[in-house]
Image (cartoon, rainbow, N blue to C red):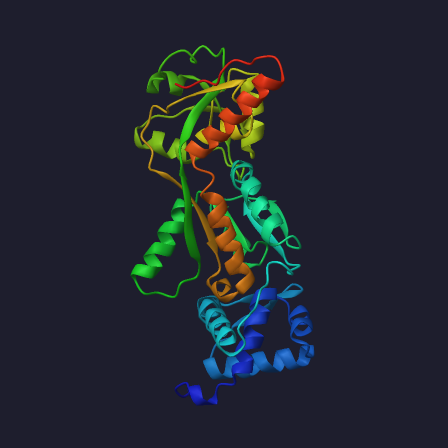
Length: 344
């Protein structure tokens, strides 16, 4: 095969390639492009001939990309999005929009962000709908790549490191991110737990029995990674995939768990639980939004990112404490007095 001649490239072939990569199915791609399946097959054949690679091979009822196709797709998708934005800029009027956006996040993040976010939606975009899907991984890029979610929000240290490294090395950016707020993880237990009235030492922490919140279900988390670095380990006797579930279980057992500090107040768990600082040093906990780079040029997605960023300004631990204190005062005025929240 001779050298690749860019002048011989039909840009329509890249549109077909992008759609087939997104769908992993020729029939669905053809339907989305409003062409026949033989036309899709013919376009892929021409592109294979130009590039000298199979690109997509049949597997089951769909197709599977080759390593060359996987490497090429982010460049193609981002370039097509930029071209579309230049030639036919998208428009989005929040007041009249009827869009649905899918957000992937854990329950603690949802409890923190969704109340202020839905206030913004109701004021500015009453026709817009939000759908929150559970986060089942610390790496949400697969959810974004297969369009299962428009944006993912959470604590993604490895993902953010990859995105930063791509930018620093001038590589093709496969995902983008925005820092929303910083949090802190703390050790949480029931109010009359034997360890509740004292500072928790590393020995006491490791000797206790623990509940782990694991989105993936794996019985090993970032706390265990930190303990491993100290050549220590803890005994995990229960694993769940929701912070709220963890709080309710710990409230009626001798188990310890780790929760975002401000979540204890936001989820109204403060009457049943107390928190103490963890006996190990952890890196800062950053909550980030992550999305596909081609969505940068989508006017609706731009509005969504801005709305999320504005909602996040209301979710600092200080703001959460203020909201809790307001609720506590209201509860005191409207009913029997309750014990004040713990402030270790």
